[in-house]
Length: 198
Image (tube, rainbow, N blue to C red; front, side, top):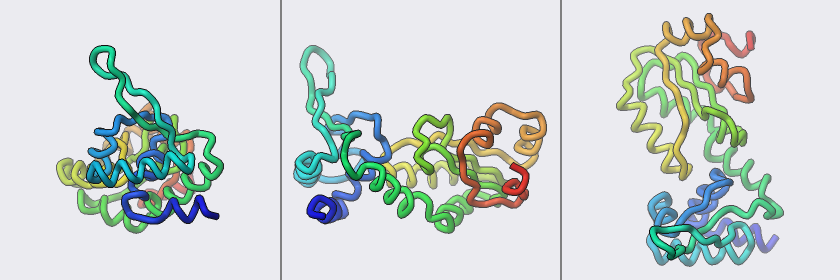
């Protein structure tokens, strides 16, 4: 219990946990940790030291220009509560379906929202998000996606399609659409009735 209670002691710690738990294969130089989490260097150093002490993250050398190696960090894949923490972070942060739909709706009239990849802990998926709708404003969509990326600490692989384009691609078995719908995914908003047909 001591380890778990120490993990959730501050907002800064949660930001760092999110960064590493949702990017299990990545290594981060200290400066990149600061950029992604928007924490001060001092706070980041303190929290990283604590997460390293309890075993959630490991310190690793990061190659830099020349022969010098910088100090970096990565997720400890053998941490005893790893799967539970990843599930908790995803359930509480990523898959608040109503909030996700509301945020994406600012970019256009949504018809279909499909999540995969990071949203369902399928780290090797080719895409994380498919958005289908009418009058999608790409600038507004990019703004929403960027905010989500900053919360997650990782870039999202996503596709946005207008309704006619999606329906055509679906009818011909387009690879982009099939790569999302034929593999593990979750439909969180559906005006086409695809949940029944897939």
